[in-house]
Image (cartoon, rainbow, N blue to C red; front, top):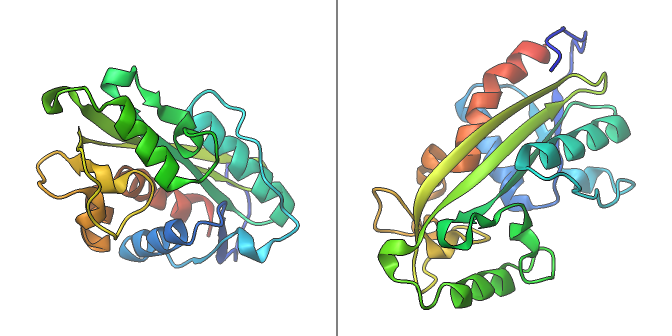
Length: 210
């Protein structure tokens, strides 16, 4: 990956390559906590940017594909993440297919219910899983950075909590009795896979966007 500086002086806006308002709010909190003074905007500001095919075979590849596409189309630095739930007894699936596990992209309820059905006969002690996230920064020049984060835990039988999205209501992080959806935003950001990946990326933002 390139480490050359790019001359993006004065850039004060950063595009998060998503229309998911939950992710946008989460990244704003994380960058504010890291004292990175950038305005975070989402793809709702760029209706001309259509769906970007995630053709990579890893979280990092998909994150880079999205970040570069948005940076080129918007002319602004862009961040994209790809994340998912990896269940050990399912050989790491749904993995990169987490958002469309049920066959309908972004149908959180259907995805969650299908996963619960697939592990319904598996004893609790064998339901270990982890959330994985790759966060990618791409500049219009083509420069890039990638960081990763992991959150380990267990899958439970019954969804609990309303603060999260995706598989959060059935995932209990290590050391917790609550699901990720029962944690406050601050609690979740402190330990989440996405929070860890973005916090690691934050100092790199300061390095290449100044």
